[in-house]
Image (cartoon, rainbow over all chains, first blue to last red; front, side, top):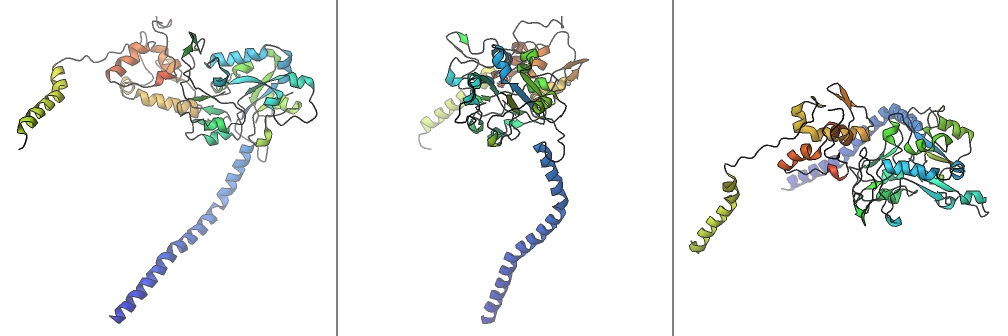
Length: 283
Length: 131
């Protein structure tokens, strides 16, 4: 009895040590192997990340669409902004609920202090800047916070750097609206197909584009469907020959946007947040 | 058995009520739905049998390709090219939601929510090119 208990305790102790020790020892061995083999792969991933940053290290290969908005030209051409907004909102069936609180905005105007908060010094900027209205829209950020917030991947950045919405997948949680620092996203509190006092929220439904339903977030899509066909976004097209808006590939050094960006001084909205907006302003 | 007098007639009434729907419709002929096919078109983007069984899957694939992958190239059918789109593709030929989509969907009692957002073509608007 005595000797068998002694034996039992010995075996139990050894197996406990082996049981606890073996997996960790095995893990250490495995890790070493993985580290050794991943040395080459990591390097590749780093260069790839550099490419996405654009402008640093290796030349970027993908497209990244962006836009330059000349606020001075919009200021000089009164009515041009409204024309652009109408071109956009008419095509995409953007409803007008006749109520500021429920407003749906893809493209709209803002005064300087609202569009560029934090950019005012304690000295007053010139009166013209303060009198100007700035066209604002989704910035199609290179580092979009809305995409990170979306729990269903309804909003995502596509291969061309455009931040897209898949309305089919939107569950209306509005996390993206909380995440977007530009207020570029609007929520359909009401059914866009409805009407108030006999006036439909969408004046004339464009049969080429769907409407939205209640409980869905919407925003500017940089006219992804037109860009894919080699056309300019509707707002840019509406500016005509004024060149108040210039659209193109920021990664292509010869594109019109890149040339304008090189030639003119431009500012972005809230660049300090690190979202890397793709919309630039000439003021 | 206790309460034989109430249980057995009760059971008979219950079973009778449950089977009423079957007896009532027994032998009645239900016409299969006849969706109206577009005039002047011979071929769809996929074989007829596939479209009958799996058009909803094709629509989902199109949606993902167009929105997520940016593959907006057109698809060919019967010598013509069509958009990968419900509104601008399918309904280009199938001009009536009521006479095409709804006939089968109502028969099968399925109510997809496509049209909560997508805009159905106006009824009684025959296509010019089909004439």
